[in-house]
Each structure stands twice: as structure tokens, then as C-alpha cells.
Length: 239
Image (tube, rainbow, N blue to C red; front, side):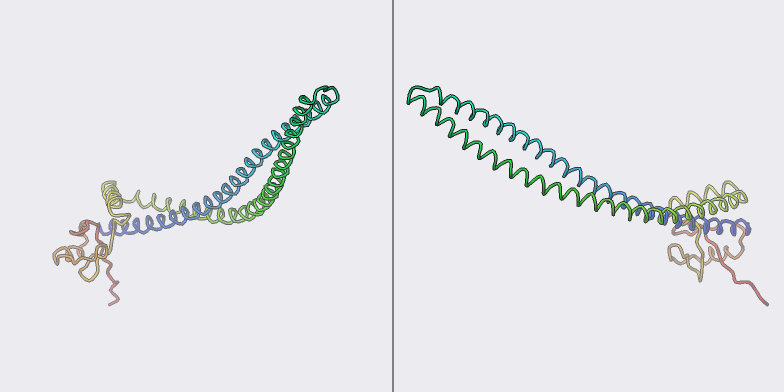
């Protein structure tokens, strides 16, 4: 039983090391995800600006079509003036031409505004695209570094799992099952040391009879407070 208890302690140590490695790996994968999110945000910002540019282009094109229509109307109306014989009709057509020219002036002003807005937007898009290129280059380098660390951690995890499997094979299946259940219930800590009459898992004092049983090492002893398996680390006797 002493050998099994020692192996159980070793199993706990291996599992804790694997847990730490998994935690480090998850943190690094989180860094990679955050870097990718930054690229996505930058691309979305460019897409949004491109959408605004398309809307401006559409609005500008519509204004230009209206301007062309009004210009044609003015040409036709001015041609009609040469054929008009009554003063009343002449005044009416002249009023149409005046209104059309006023509208043409307003359309030209709106087109100039749209053109200026579009140029400013295109400049912003060009700047954001340049920034995106720099961001992607920097992130690519960072991702490479982080991925190398992840690969190393995965290698260490594989080594840990191999060591765990070897240890598990040396233990009774019932003991491993009990150990795993405790790990699930106690946030990964199933085996703890007892020292100076105290459980180092929950820091509660152990009954003297429980502590005494630990010295025998003949059976699995659990803490009556936290139910974790107790191990007694005994200093080797040099005498």
C-alpha cells in the first residue's frame, strides 16, 4: 500500500504539472485569438468605410444623372425660346430655364460636396489599408513566436500524459477511479500532504487517530474535512 500511495502522490504531481501546461497553452491560444481579433476589427473598419464610399458613389452618380437631365432640359427650353411668338409663353419658358439653372447650380454644389467627402473617405481607407498591412505583418511575426511556445507546451503535455499513463497502469483501477473522482470534486487536488497534525489541503487539524493511521501506511486515509487523500511525508532516518 505504501508503494501505491507514493504512486498516487506522483500521479497528483504529474496531473498538476499537466494542468499548469494546459493553462499556459490556453493563455497563449487566447493571445493568438486576440491578435486575430485585432485584424478582424481592422478589416471590418475598412469594410465599413468602403460601404460608405459605395453609398457616396451611388448618391454622386444619381446627382450627376439629374444634372445631365437638367442640362438637357435647359438646352431644349432655350431652343424653344427661338420659336415662341407670345410674350406670355416666352416668360413661362424663361422661368423654367431660370429654375432649371438654379437647380443645376444646386446639383453641381452637391456633387462637389460628395466628391470632397468621397476623396476624404478614400484617403481614410488608404490609410487604414496601410495600417492593416503593418498590423498583419507584426501579428504574423507574433503568431509565429506564440505558436512555437504552444508547440513546446503541447510536446511537454504529451510527455506528461505518457508519464501519467505509465503511473496509472501501476495502480489499481479502483484507486485511480477514486482519485479521479476526488480531482473532479476538489478543483484538481485529490491528494495532499498531512503535516504537523494538519491537512494541507484544507488547513484543518486532523484527529489524532487519523494522523496516527497515516504513519502505518496500510490503507488510504482521507481528510475528514475535505475528503482528500492524505499522504505523510516522512524524513529518511539517517541513524
